[in-house]
Image (cartoon, rainbow, N blue to C red; front, side, top):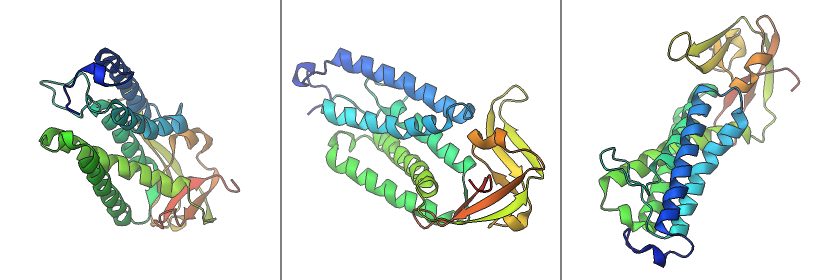
Length: 244
């Protein structure tokens, strides 16, 4: 269907209704994206889940609407029916959190898996949604979305859905630090604890920790560095409470 087809040809979705739905989705995407990046200690798990689900909802809406929605991302003439914000902001937030919260022994396999998944996603878009084939801007939007979304989803899936028991190495927290954006009054971005490098599979003393666990770790406290084989066979490690 042509992108400018009359709204009456879209069962249950007038153009005005689609504008309202997309506008609400844009607000939700901005709120979820910013909270996930800047304020992750409050609703960490829920925010990550929403970052995964909101882009999928946007894609489902595009399929349901059958044509009038697009992925236009130009600032000069932004389409009111563009799903670019709904796709991009949550995907970027998810990828950012995966990059600064998780620890992998070897990153190239994860990057390669994300690249392959992104190519497959782009191929599906190319095959089933021909409206953006001749639009370089929309192609670029989908390409970037596919890369960052694949990286974020695969990284968290490898860790959170790891079926292996893994093993723990006991150690002591020597120090804690928070990287702050925007100066002293900025919001926390990443959280790290310093342990004996011998306890880390990568041999590093500073290890990223998930924000929702930050307050439970105290300097001088005994913790364990848990190592897992990963759902995708990409080894990872994290600081956890011993016995958890």
